[in-house]
Length: 448
Image: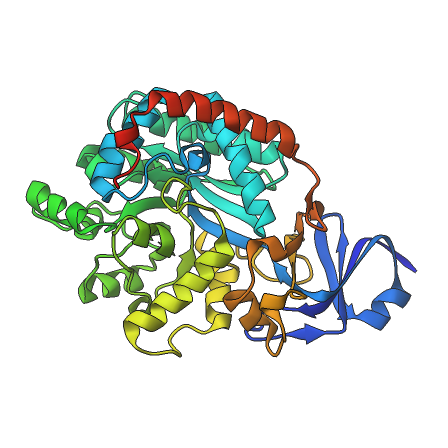
């Protein structure tokens, strides 16, 4: 018999590729952090002697879910300011709180809280955009979590950098060392929005991104006010301004991308731009609903993100999938517009390809990293099971995620986090709540 580190025997296996495939009576093996084989269960029991055998007869095995856009450390601002329009939310609450509280310590604790929450929800990779990205990367490595770490780029001074040039310099250091070839960390540049950078800063960014072959992600066409402001200041809509500066290409991830017209969708499609769709945050802030059906019809690749916990208010990607599917059906008037299989791909292989990780994660295939999850369908809300993919998308909750592996490491074992001391983590969260809460006027947190 051959040695195998881990053998998983699920009730169903959804490998994602080929699309729509559901396998039963199979086993998936893990050796040295990689998927070694998907084979009939009986064959696996004869072929392999496993160090660990995981029997999950009522569960569906999936590739790990991917959160294509978040601000992980903002978990510490969760619930700080709710029920406000986006401009007031930012200007009266979030930006002042960031100026007061953002630090390496805050980013470390907030990111650890986010990783714990995401692991429990079946997320094995997240794409982040926040200050102190080196701390985000360090925290992800320490906790054995996969991450795409974005370097924030803005013109005005912050606790992390004094201007866009310093942001780019620090981001270049992050790309080169120590994460150039790290198995868990990828990097990108993450300018906040077209409102926060001058043309000169964008040109500086473009040169560096081209030189380093580094992707770019940006909040783009998120609100009607953003588009109007761009027209007033520059005479151009944000997407056209970026196109004129040479930034509209296949390495760009447009986050939100709500207020777009047909010509802009065609431009995005022809240039190979991808979209990170964050439906719950968009709705909560009153920003609008992205035209998902139009994107899909035009061939624009769409991934799913939660945005930060300050505007969502959770990092539950399963909930996000359900919301994305239902919204697309509601606004198009077509119940077939986004199937359960299609929306699940948006949080797996489509997201992986969007982040440049399609050869490594996003599907259950021999040779890929063993980023895997099990979801327990033996719950009243998920029974009976006629179609396990439909049950995952339309019924499953985060607390049904029983097991998570990242690069073969069993991070969530039968519902228990194995690498995070949640007691200590929650104590630190309570301390942050006392500090931040006492410093924040009640009338800046919400409106009745």
